Image (cartoon, rainbow, N blue to C red; front, side, top):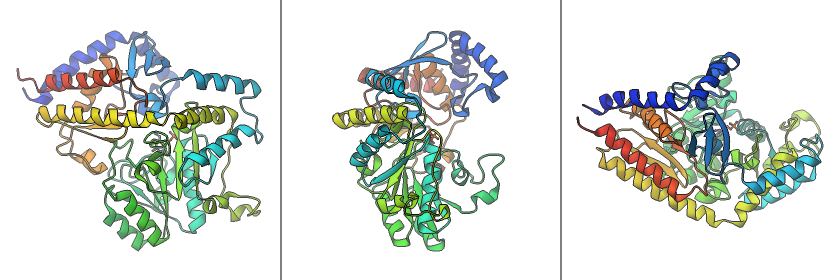
Length: 451
Ligand code: PMP
């Protein structure tokens, strides 16, 4: 029997076990299908044959509606860098909520948090809060266009910046609108280049007046692909040479690779850095963008009284006390416990070596990629370096899904069933990391077993 045949019969059994364990999730899915298109609040959270409905999360664990407990390596889309609901953050938020959940006026909480952030985020002299990573990217690009007075934006194939029109292309390949209802014309100023290819970036910058290059310093949703040595520095140089701004989308890498995110980790400064997820302290409504004062000042209505002479940004809930206090409390803790980063990054480098070794020991079925705690697993013919590799070098149509089923029925969660990636907490216990590695080895053994 070959691997694919093995997997088909294993999948049959694992699906049966999943259904047996998750009756209440099945019921909830049936109800959800009547009120949510596709039965889900977000398509990313769907998995076959129906998603788990999770009722509780604490630390490194979550519990589903049937009471099953799972080790969570997904951590709220990577937002929970210290695990689910740390007590000290929840308590701080409880206190401020009594003062007002959303004041609708300028407030000291947002000022204090912003002061703190400008002290710890490299190159961020000024910032503005948003309510999501998508919004932060949208406003960051608007600002870059206003600043450079140019329209073109260069993004990377496989780069995910949220569902904002101008950036919602070339998330997958081939390019083009990623959604129905997204006119081609909205993408006319968006150019995509492969990751880890400076020549491609240079060619585009020579040919077009580019406002900004926007890049995830480590490709996240596209499979945790690291930048090659010198790539980010090269982009920095090229942007400078051609008068474009460099935007780092640090929605995942921010507060994760290092306190100062990828800018600190790789020692490369962006003109504008975009944050999401952890910046909100694990509370909904997480987003910010910031950078050099000279660039950010273009949002200043006092300096530019004519609304059309400045870049717009705003929103009902932006700068609310809940996110400001949650974010500040969490990030201050991280700043006071910087050794967490050394520990977590070393642990996951080790984990990736172990996973990679397991792949090598099993006919090189796969590769582990990533940086710091960001970890991807790829069932590809060679180690992927671009998103095209992630996609085109796959050799199986079922193995990613089979792995997801196997982990699920063994009480381990990560995302997603097509592109396996883990965004663990920095304080994820080592025992849990070992459990993942052991399960992964067992999975490969079963997949490659000769009958
Ligand atoms: N940028 C990156 C790198 C992301 O990973 C995400 C979300 N996964 C976003 C932007 C969008 O953020 P949000 O979902 O908060 O809109």
